[in-house]
Amino acid sequence: MTEEYERIGVHYDILTDILEERNLSDDLDILPPLQLEKHQNVVDDYWVIDKFAHTYIVEDTETYRLTYRIIEPEMTKDESLILYTIFSDLKRTLILRDFTIDLHSRADILLSNLDTILDEYAIDVSDKLYVKMLYYLFREFFGYGVIDPFVNDIYIEDISCDGYEIPIYIYHRKYGSLETNVVLNREAVDRLTLKLAQRSGKYLSIANPLLDATLPDGSRLQATYGTEITPRGSSFTIRKFTAEPLTPIDLIYFGTIPSEIMAYLWLAIEHKLSAIIVGETASGKTTTLNSILMFVPPDAKIISIEDTREIKLYHNNWISGVTREGVGGEEIDMYDLLRAALRQRPDYIVVGEVRGREALTLFQAMSTGHAAYSTLHAGDINQMIYRLESEPLKIPRSMLQFLDISLVQFMWTRGGLRKRYTKELNEILGVDTVDKNLLVNQVFKWDPSLDKHIQVSASKKVEKIAESMGGDVEDVMEEINRRKTYLEAMLEKGIRNFKEVTRKIHAYYRNPEVAYESMVDYVRA
Image (cartoon, rainbow, N blue to C red; front, top):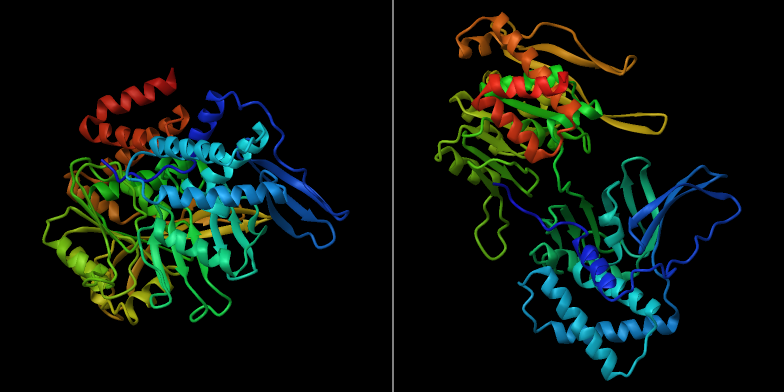
């Protein structure tokens, strides 16, 4: 039904179960107190990993600068030496083990070997030290090492290491870009960068120092190795993957897209109107694309094409394609995948982001009746047109008219609060026969003074939808209002899980009257 990723933090759930089985689950006070200067105070704090990792957002009252501090179990110098010795022995022992088995079995093997090593060395460790050792061993063997708390923090979107002896930075959903208290030396950065590459199943070396890959949890990894192309040292950026993708109901809840626009998009996607979502970096383009693809009819054939896996659908008839680099084999780029996709008779084609020669093929697919969806880096509709017509995309203006809808995403910041909005929804109506300008109809836009979306003109695409439905415009508007009510009913009922939302959308396709009445009657009751 959908591609499964490794669940973040599951190794700590196993660790908690082990501690409970061994009666070690009581509070052992293994975290050191937070040390603050006189001009510092805590503005927020919360657990990242229960009992093991606590984070503090600290403000400098002189500079008003915020920093992110992660506090983990404290080890003395002697305890660290013991742990290092055990870790080295375990690596030599476990390297011969079969790690294709499930995580629970791997944890049992690690625990068994740890106990054996402690017996061989005749080391009698206290409960407190044993728990701390287990945490760090689980963090290193099953997690992402020193950055594992950042990976497990649900409020962190990006993790960035810029080089040697430079603090790791994170992007926090609430507080924005923050410097952390984690600083790694050359050896640690190089080792961690290689570890991330290995976890993604890719190869990184001095000869091949650049990597774009996907981690087991679905997060996107971009990394460099050495100092040749990044003089400050090896670097990596992790764009965290949301295990449960946001749904149309989530975007309505957050105010990103109101229910009337979402209902319009639902009907547009059903009737194969093509769309491109444009916006700047971190504006929510892929999130919005993934969300509205849940409106694809249940039995339609979807083919998605990406550089790294980001699209996640709960859809049976879906082929997910990912490009391949040329190391050790022939390179397969997005153009190759798209060309192959057109031979598979898809109903819907999804390209993660258009940025090269695949753009022309995508628009050719639109011109032959395929519904196509993608994202593009651009600030507004004018920039979108300029980028599509310029190198390297080079789309003729005569072909731009086959695009039906353009959504513009952006991140709004006010008073330290950051929100993602659909700034405007535009319809592409065609090319003016006189001056050859592209005819654009702006239907909705976000008004910052009101902090709400307003409709600025009537939709012209409803006529195209009406023709597909065999009805008139009034019928289309009535159906949009019905779907708007249906989506709002899901929101009121608290249905936001992506599988459950998709099931409800599919139920509406198969029997709209029954699905609508059961949902709306529940809310009325």
